[in-house]
Length: 510
Image (cartoon, rainbow, N blue to C red):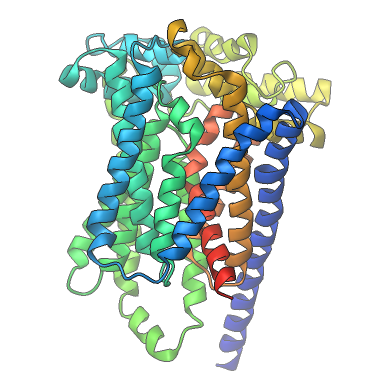
C-alpha cells in the first residue's frame, strides 16, 4: 500500500503547487489591474493638478481611518454583535447612505437605453410579446421583477431606484455574514466589517444606484446563495442531514436565479467546484483524529453536492420555462454568439457597436427564430472576419482588459439618467478622480491581502473570490466589453481588500 501513500503525497504536492502558482499569478494580475491601471488613469488624465490632489486625498483619509478603527477594536470579543447588532448597523448605514444619494440625485430620474425599455416593458400585460426579450433572455426575468415591484409599490422609476437601495444594503450585510461563516481566525470580525464597509461606500456603486439595472438583483441573489451554502456546510451532520440537503437546494436555487439577471452565475459554479476540490484535498493533510471526523460526514457532503448541482440545473430549466410563458414565445437559452461577436469583431474592437450589435438579432429573425442556426451563422461570419483581418492579437486583449478596468462609462449612463437641474451633484471630472482614487486604494489592499493569503493555509472564501474575479476577467476578454459589467465583481474585490486590512493590522502587531 506504500504506492497509494506515495501517489497521495504527489497529488497533494501538485495541488499545493497549483494553489500557490495561482496566487502568485493573481498577485501580478491584481497589481496590474487594480493598481497600475487606475494610477495610469489618474496620472494621464489629471496629472498633479490641485483638483487631483484634493479629491484623491479623501479616499486616503477614509482608508486611514478605517485601518485605525480596525486596529483599535482588533482584540474585542464579539458574540451577539456578530449576528445581530453589527449586521443591523451595516444594513442601516448602507441603506441611509443610499437613500441620501437618491434624495440628492435620484428623484425624478428619466431612464435611458435598456433601462428605459425594461421600465416600459414591465407595464405590459402578460405575456409581453417582445421578440427582443426572447432573443436576449438576460433581461426577461428582470422585467418580471420590475412588474411585481411596480404592482406592489407603484409604477415609477423611483420605485425601482429605492428597491436598488434596499438590495444593495442587503448585499452589504450578506458580505459580512459570508466572511464570518467562512473565515476562522481572530481577525474574522474585522475582515467581515471592513469588507462590508468598503462595498457600502464604493463610490461608483452609489452613483450607479440611480439606474434601473439588473446587476443589483444579481449581486444580492448570488451573495445570498453563497451565504446559504456556507451556513449549510457548517450545520450539516448526522442529525441535521435533511435540513442540510434542503439548504444545498435553496442555495442552488438562489445562485441559479441570479443567473437570470446576469449570467456570471456560471463562473461562480465553476469557482465553487474548483475551490471545494482544493479545500477537500488540503484537508487530507490534517491529523488522523480530524480526518476521521471529516470522513464521517463525507457521505452527507456528497449527497449535498449532488443535490446542489441537480437543484441548480432544475431551477435553470424551470426559469426558462417561465420566461417562455412570460415573453410569449420560446426564449433563447444561449445568446452568447451575440456577445462573442461584439467582443471579437474587427469592427467593434470589443465594445458595443450599433451595426455589429444588430447582426445577431437580424440573423435570428431571418432564420425564423432558430437560435442554433442563427448562432452558427454569426460564429461562421466571425471566424471569417478573424481570418481576414488578423486582429486577434495580444495587444487586442490587453486593450480590452484596459478598457474594461480603466473606463468610466457608467458615469455617462448615470448623468443621462439624472435630470439636468440635478446634475450639479455629480460633476464628471471630480467623480472620475474620486472613484478611481478609491479603486486604487482598494487595489493596494487587495495586493497586500493576497500576499498575506499566500503565506496561509487554503481559505475557501478568499480562494473563491479570486477565482471568480479571474474568471470574470477572462470572460470579458472574449465577450462584449462594458465597463459597468465589472460591478458584479466588486463584493469579491472588497472581501480580498478586507484581507489586506488584516495584513496591515498583523504587521502593526509585529
